[in-house]
Length: 558
Image 1 (cartoon, rainbow, N blue to C red):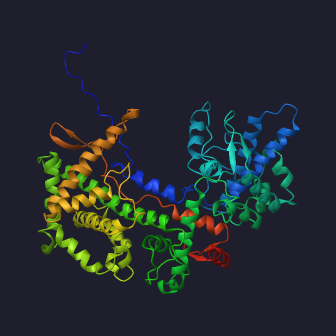
Image 2 (tube, helix red, strand yellow):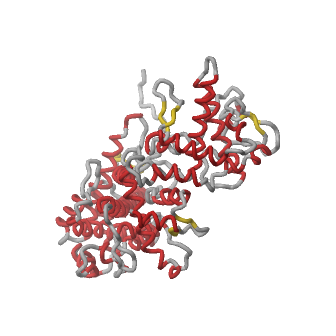
Image 3 (cartoon, rainbow, N blue to C red):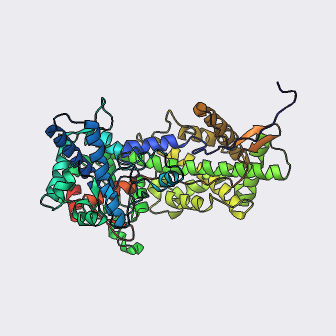
């Protein structure tokens, strides 16, 4: 029994991602527009080679008297994945699952299994402890990689519920396996590759298999079978869920690319930058002011416009979170009052110092400036081809430039000012977009919906900016963080980055900076990379894209 308090060191395990819980809506919109892909998928041959290997596993099982399906599947699936990564790593191809595995650099014979070719971290653990059990490590058939689109998104494979880790081919998978077979038929190493029992190989052997393993240029047969599911032109062939959404999202991207391509040379690039495609999709207009053809894709275009606006709003809130963390740090060092209201009022006062004199008295002054720039156009999106200061990409870029400010720097005040401008901009644009039925202003998982943000603008439009931002800081940064963390206490970990202690707000992290912020990863790039693998667009060395002749024909065909 203790007869006095016993103090132990606080366990600092704060590794909170998305401290305000605002990522859910954005991720849901991405999944709705580009279902079946994520930010890892890039190579058609990963899909086709794995499907082909599943066929070889089935053939091997059919030939065996008492087949061990699990063992055959494990051997074959590991074999093809390791070979794909090993060869392409030697060719310095980026974006490979399992690229950190220790593949032999000499020509000794090696067994193709995840356990025999561990990643760097597992290898170091194994060196320190010979009894360490090596796990699968990173590979293509995992949730962060190709598995979601292989199994669910485009349904090339169906996993056995009775025997997890074993698969059968769907009709789409059969077509893709046929495409790979056509590409490698006649290759000297084809039969060895098909034999799931042959799993030892030398480095020079892998190099000889290059034509079968190279991910950079799939064959026409593979492209045709893949695109039939990825970007279908025949509804009777497509089998994946919500493929019509993905069709609309890809069509929107291609039409945006087509509209901007004539002006690429004026930008000093060979093709169109991904950022240009992204915001042309959101506007529904090219930068030259030409209306995009939105036939059959109006709804998804509205979702995309909503998504880009939500990205801007989220970055503003996350930047305010950094402002709050910085304020708490400074107040602690300076031994100032640290109640929630002190924090909100302090940041509000700092905002007014950061604003020009003409914008300090009322939020309405900024609203009026934005409305004046918009003129007779229906929205900022519609006006932005002709009014550069209203372009979302320009506004967002200004905030991105300063959002990871150094504490007690000029950039800290600029970040606060730009966050305020972002919230007012998003509120006014949300009001502008009320006439668009496809821009949903409130979702069930919203933390600060566009509807609520519009309401805040209406409430504070004739108030000082300090009052507006103080309210946002109090209720949609500090208290929202507390609420979000409390929802995530299921595993017992501490996710508070700051909390309310005996002396007011205090940072939880005992050392280090206040954490960085940024935009959520965008699936558009990977959507375009797959289109490039299908021959519908071309990617240049500078990272820009252009429609190919096949892409133009596909767009013309509808």
